[in-house]
Length: 166
Image (cartoon, rainbow, N blue to C red):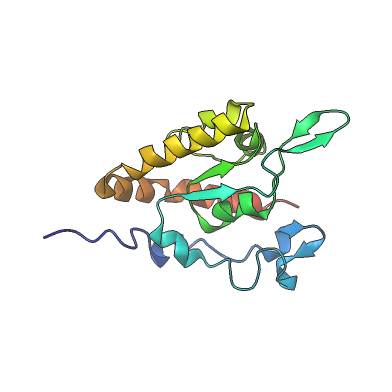
């Protein structure tokens, strides 16, 4: 009999999940205004049915500044999988994953190959993301079950980290 791997994670795995509304802002709006993530779009239950999230950043080529050149643009999209307890790949500019890592987030380098983050060429970066999606998608469900269960404390770490930003 084939084992059903739907809902590998459930409410018990995310008992630490709580509101972090006071700490998340974007463009001077907060989640109380329902403008950060949209109405009812931040529902952690969808994370129970995914193995990883693919984030397509708003400005995947970065933002040009006079002093530092291109810098990663991190919108609410990059933080949504952190808040909902998911693995993630981000289609953003070079250094997007590094920027999250430098800010203290666990980007799960031992599970996801973020080598794409180092490439200047946006086409190559996108192709490398596609290759990583194919690799991750080929991992058997029973391996994913063990992997995701083992990552719950790290999902919680990321959630607490974003919740403590003042």
